[in-house]
Length: 241
Image (cartoon, rainbow, N blue to C red; front, side, top):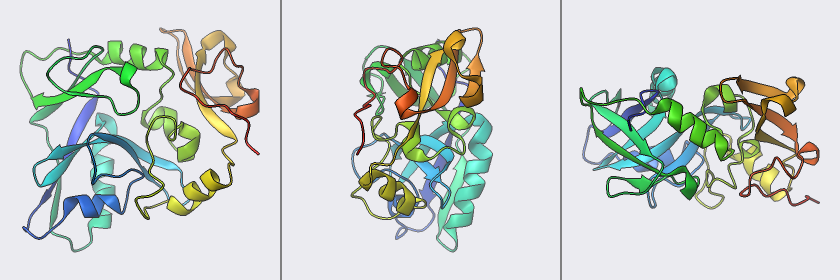
């Protein structure tokens, strides 16, 4: 039980040898895709709000985007709009699947957001694949990590804990939404955060989504209203000036 059926892969591939796929994506997303992969990254609106989040994997001369299956077509369409005249293929890789385990083995790589999330790997689709989506969601939320459009969508990227979870590079250069994201960071103006909380302690006015079966919810709260006992160990709540 390792396959994440709720994840899909989009392949970005050069259709002409001179095309640099990494350079194309580098100018669009929040993280450095020319360094060590995988990395977690976001594709933002010009205002710095989340449209999509995904993990970026190496794939020869191209890249693979590990994203929500329900958002894969929309993400591919958005990337196609940015492609313009570049000879870069953008298509779902439905012959491949994303796998996860909450322990480390030989198959994959540590989740770049948080080592405790476990390891992920990509493998050809098999009829013997069995779903691990429920176990993954429970494990992820138990560590206070949010992802996907229901939890992150239309929230400012730094309010999605992108600094703590290694989802942003402030040195790689420009990308869509970079101006507002960088300004928030340098001015230390991240006033709200996404937070996983017990459902009975969730603030309905700030709630993004609830998971009744797990007894959890994701709230979008002001930093000064986050109780210390609800903040995960990795979350830096140091008061900002």
